[in-house]
Amino acid sequence: MSAVQLTPKDLKSDQEVRWCPGCGDYAILNATQAALAEIGVPREKMTIISGIGCSSRFPYYMGCYGFHSIHGRAAAIATGTKTANPDLSVWVVTGDGDAMSIGGNHLIHAMRRNVDLKILMFNNQIYGLTKGQYSPTSPAGLKTKTSPYGSVDLPFNPINLALGSGATFVARTVDTNPKHIKSTLLAAAAHKGIAFVEIWQNCVIFNDGAWKDWSTKDARAERTIDLQPGQPLVFGKDNEKGLRISGGEVEVVAAADADVWDPTTAAPLAYIMAYLDEREDLPHALGIFRQHDKPTYDGAVKEQIDSLTAKKGKGDLKKLIYTKDAWQVG
Image (cartoon, rainbow, N blue to C red; front, side, top):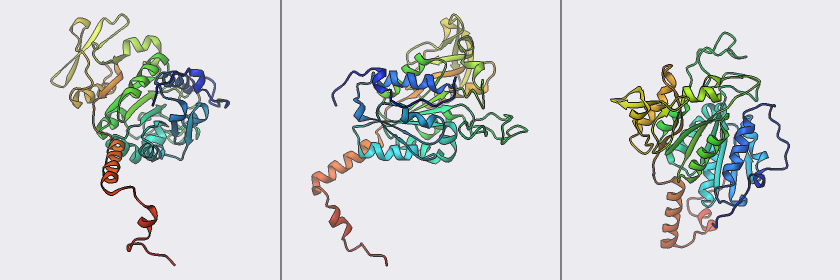
């Protein structure tokens, strides 16, 4: 495939965008169009596959092929799409309700198999399209239409779920920082294998301010840390503070004494950074948690087909159907 140079405008469709005014999805859409314009893939070799939910209207607004599929099945449909068409760049857009509940099984197996997909999971901690039920990522105690006295569910940590499922690229970004979204998606696009990107996204109607303690510009500096490969683990308004990991414990140190982040090292370090979410005294992590190489499912299927075709010749569907093992019903 020869590289092409697109502009973000090339990836805008002629459809009217119908998200609520102020929705974080707008920033994600613009950043995604900017990122995909730079990956050197022509529009006819690019497809966006979504499930159900506000985020899953994404394919309508992209100037490339797309499939607005059914609830929770985006990862499964994308697996088939990529496996049958290895030269496509396949992106999945889903939400926390779509991916973590009815689609959970499909999601974890796509990650386990390391299918060469790029999965963008918008996490607003609520079912927005169906008007405000608590979701699998809603924090305990959240009052919603289905939990009027506060949810008693303990939420998923999507990063830990992805790490535990064997995803070879795991990252997190936030809708209030389009530059960070774009750079994260470019890194995901460059990764050969599955890339799972959690995107903190604000729902202005049903869960407004879900991430405000970490997502505003001032809060991000003090309350988040950006995991960038080869860069020191520093944070703070002037990057004056750092993190050091020793014996599985994390401590705040001066920036000069901070560890340098390497997402290719042993998986436990990525888990440790994901568990920062549970510490009020430490910043939450954004950026790239884990990145390592592993054979892809779609690549293995293609190799197997190519090998058998070389040995046995091209298959004959009619002969396959009319074998002695075939039978008629009725």
